[in-house]
Length: 155
Image (cartoon, rainbow, N blue to C red; front, side, top):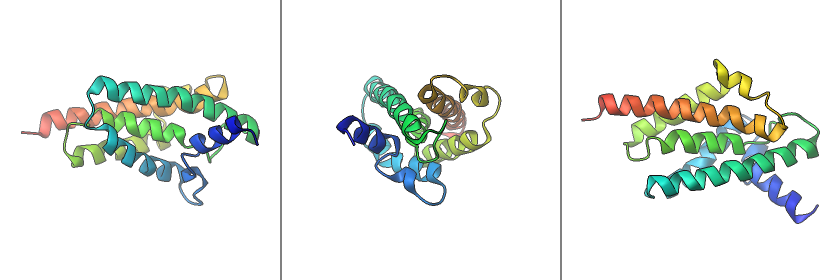
């Protein structure tokens, strides 16, 4: 295996989270929480830049993993869940933990249910783009809902 192929696999599976035998997407999302904790104190623009860079690298890694496994959206690829989680939680980074956990929970619901336009995004081509796009949109939707709840309910 080449260094690039190994890097793509490690990133796509988020250091092995995607190899979990049960609920690898949820395990991937939970695996993103430590990175969120590290990013949360950063200036929002720097936080967004890091997440954007991870989304771009994740699209590349997801594409390579899909090609290697000859599957449209391999279950072991969880970098999309990682990015969606970081987006959702990032939108409430300055809020208290209940709102961060709400963002995470809403993201998982939107990722699993794929309401409205979220579902159509997973069919984008190339495969890496489709793998990532629906979770990015689910992260945005979940984060905005959690942010709204925070704005309404926080003193």
